[in-house]
Image 1 (cartoon, rainbow, N blue to C red):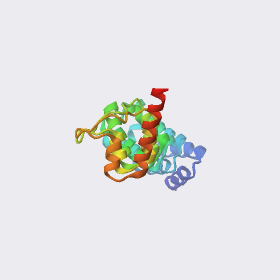
Image 2 (cartoon, rainbow, N blue to C red):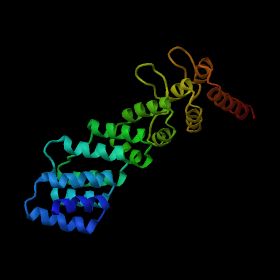
Image 3 (spheres, helix red, strand yellow):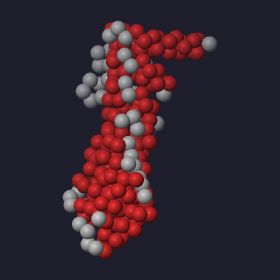
Image 4 (spheres, one colour):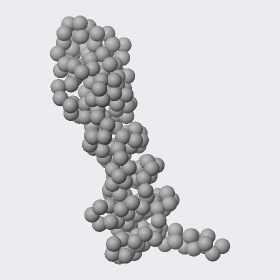
Length: 233
């Protein structure tokens, strides 16, 4: 019954009971699957202290293969479990870097966090991916109209005027052509350059106008008018 008790204690966030049961089950020689189940439910419910304790006590016994830790981290991102993700990354480094820096797992987790609009998870993961990967996600989020992700990523040392590799468009071009007026306004506020042209020599304003996105075009026109006033003042 101890394994069921451990699962339930991890589920409700009962740290003291988890401490006691983990020690007891280790002494009894419980199989790794018992601890995996408890770890999964702790991540699911974002109980960071329990995640940290299970990893600290059980360590490598939790791992059958390299990508086990990667799955745990991706689960944290999908569940918006920032406390659990932080505990995983801090603890895993003590066991030979089981969550491997520089692999695609951080990129995938960051993408999931952006899709979930999890600002805390994104801030935690951004330093783990390259600037190139941040900029690619920044452009994608602008194209999708994901305002919160754009805000968080814009603080991640990205070039606001970086271009995608397929069309050579900036985040502002994508947001304008999709009619995401609030994202356009955010990008302009962050100092994205509205004068940058696509390969076809179109500005963001021209793209918004061509697509009939009145609100986005209006934001760009007002910004251009304000800049002209400040220049001539």
